[in-house]
Image (tube, rainbow, N blue to C red):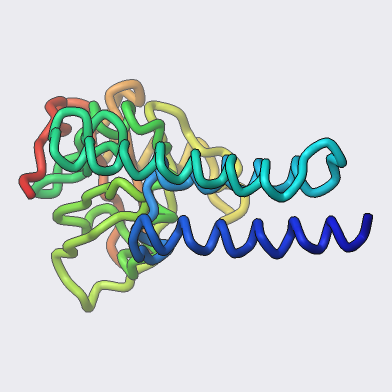
Length: 222
């Protein structure tokens, strides 16, 4: 029994390696949701077959080979059909264009403001004010063009889609009344109109209202 499990594991590993090499070399940052799905299914095939005595190595190799052929044919088909390719693998989405939030794409991709800020920080952009262009790639990472590479000012998200971030205020020894007063001084009297407001001691407030945002989708050529 142990010898059979070891043999299945060996053949499964070799089969998975062959499939991955057959379908092309990709770094982890280039893996699309489609690629993730087929690798998970391959892993599932191997996992289920190892401990099932009714499944021999021939069955395992047949299943892996059949799945590899299916994926290869799908890859060849989608590469020749742009519409299908975009539907299966997705396409880049412009989240910020010329410093304007694209609300439609942000909502479509289920991205929250704090999540967007975290993604920006990973690209060494610490303020939404400093983001000129932001593109969400098909693999889930973002590409950022910043207004200034020197601006490393850390900011606090205080208003998110019309709601005050009370926990952030409390953590930084600030309060609701202080925020409302400061926003009124900046000319913002209605919180519901604010989709995003960040603040730092160095630069003060950066506020985006719904009227300041884009609501259209942009296509990325190539």
